[in-house]
Image (cartoon, rainbow, N blue to C red; front, side, top):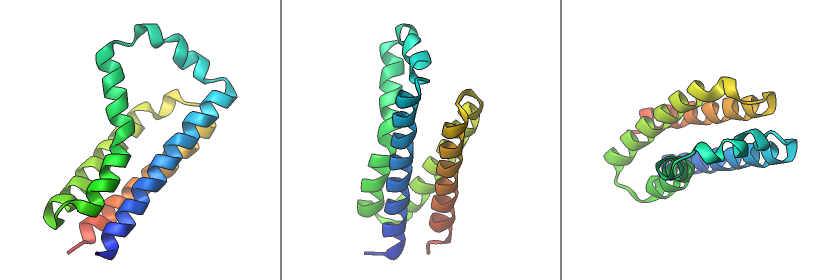
Length: 120
C-alpha cells in the first residue's frame, strides 16, 4: 500500500478526533446549550446534512485506503478544500477553544491537499 494513502488516512483520523474533541469541549463548557436551544429550528433535512458532514472524515478515511489512485487523489483535494471553505465560513461563530481546534483541522486539510497534490 502506498505511503501517501496511509498519511491521508491518518490526517482524516486526526480531523475526526479534532472535531470530536471540539464537540466534547462544547458540551463541557456549556456552549452547546446555545446550539441545542436552536434544535427546534432544525429541519430533518438539516439533520441529515449535519450527519453527512460529520461522517465525511470516516468515509474519506475508508476511501483513502480503498479507492483507486487517480480518483482518490482528486477526492481528497476536493473534499479537503470544501472542508476548509466550510470551516472558514463558520469560524467566527465559535468560542476561542473551538477556533483553535478548527484552525488545527484546517491545517490537517492543507496537509491533505499538499500530499494528494504531490502524489504521482
